[in-house]
Length: 260
Image (tube, rainbow, N blue to C red; front, side, top):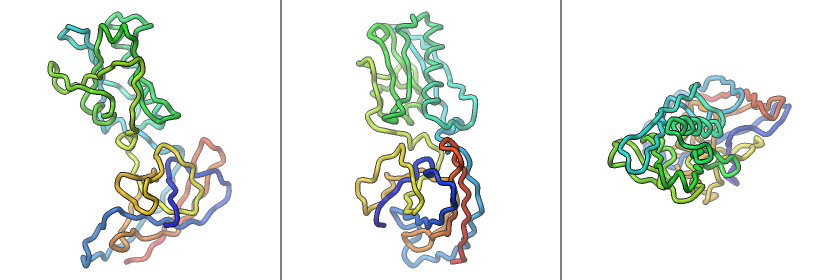
């Protein structure tokens, strides 16, 4: 591959049909050398409309809690997302923040001292803001799934209430040092070489331009794919076009492949 482009959300705007060849390579072989790989390639026609879902709310159970310093009683709340998929990580942050505001209100915490949780769209990282007064009187906790998905906040495992992790908050604003969006997204990721114009977002470029690894990836539509050789998935003839509005992606792809 001469260079990498990352499918991280949407195709660049184009009102005309564009032909493209997409090749998907694996970091490791799917079949062992010499192993039979006779496979029927039957990729169905698909339509991709609107935005890719970025968070499957049914996959994880997020809960947050607040406990007064010196107390053994925690006030907690399971987050009710309202829909199966969320399409903007700012909405994820808003739901978590709403739960924190509700708990804070029930504990009588003044508005100026209530903790806030947010997603910074520019850095693509989640963050939490607290005041010195809050940190002096209260501790904040998150559930196991929350800890797994956003695991690089400063945490300490809670020994009083099992299954909870305490955020070790020492600054007014704590922001994730590293992105963990790959753990939240339900969309499969593929490294692709394509002639389609791509708008990059969310994920960084690979560190090694000639080596695809399982740590690097880009967003693409969820689709079936089949092995061609030991290290490469078969290429398909693709036709795609972009919708009429920058906020709407209307992609239509047709795949054709013979029996290997």
